[in-house]
Amino acid sequence: MHLPEPVSLTDGRLLLRLPDERDVDPITAACQDPDLARWVPVPVPYNTSHARDFVGSRRDRWGAEDGEMTFAVTDAGNGSLLAMVGLHARDASMREIGFWTAPWARRRGVMTDAGRLVCRFGFEVLALGRIEWWAGVGNDASWRVAEKLGFRREGTCRARLLHRGDRLDGWVAGLLPGELR
Ligand SMILES: CC(C)(COP(=O)(O)OP(=O)(O)OC[C@H]1O[C@@H](n2cnc3c(N)ncnc32)[C@H](O)[C@@H]1OP(=O)(O)O)[C@@H](O)C(=O)NCCC(=O)NCCS
Image 1 (cartoon, rainbow, N blue to C red):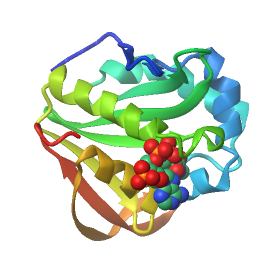
Image 2: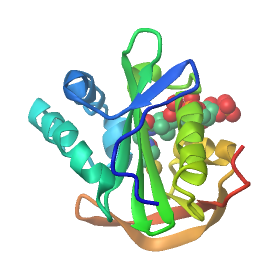
Image 3: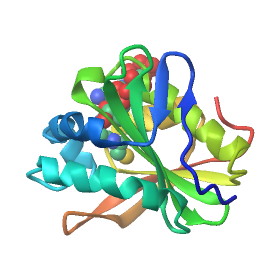
Image 4: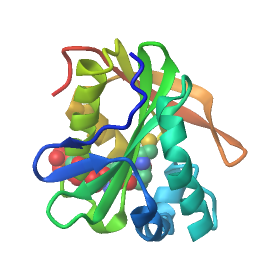
């Protein structure tokens, strides 16, 4: 389904909305984290101009056929940035989920709850037939989030992921309508 205008999602604790200028400094701070850079192909070193380009491109990327619906995950109470999650279009009814949580917000269930909101949106609003998850082999934290959402691990693909010029083995998992937990 084509959805040209960005939407916000909330469960009361978290508010997910289009990233904007407010997020430039916290995104820049989060992307200094070596654990994030190990698994997510952000530029290294990461500076504010990277974050500014990133937030500046989100609205156009939202509705593009091969685009990405990106959500800044914020604290619904005080507005602070906690994480980022996106649904990247792969074909007309399949998208790939990608995410990171800022180091200061980890292990509080943020990505489990944000991922649930985004996957529900994917099935109920976008009418997706499959949401796919990919991670480098060994990214146990990312897998734990996916597993809690109901994703089923389907295999390991050799040299599947391109990460800063290196080809890494990747885990793949899928979530179909009715499987979200
Ligand atoms: C993966 C990541 C997004 C998890 O975010 P989070 O908001 O901390 O996740 P949650 O708090 O919702 O935790 C979900 C589950 O994962 C577990 N978990 C979180 N971090 C973990 C870690 N480092 N090692 C093992 N388990 C971990 C939690 O304990 C929880 O499981 P439980 O309920 O059984 O205890 C975060 O660690 C991160 O940003 N990592 C770096 C970037 C990255 O790898 N992104 C994914 C690329 S595919």
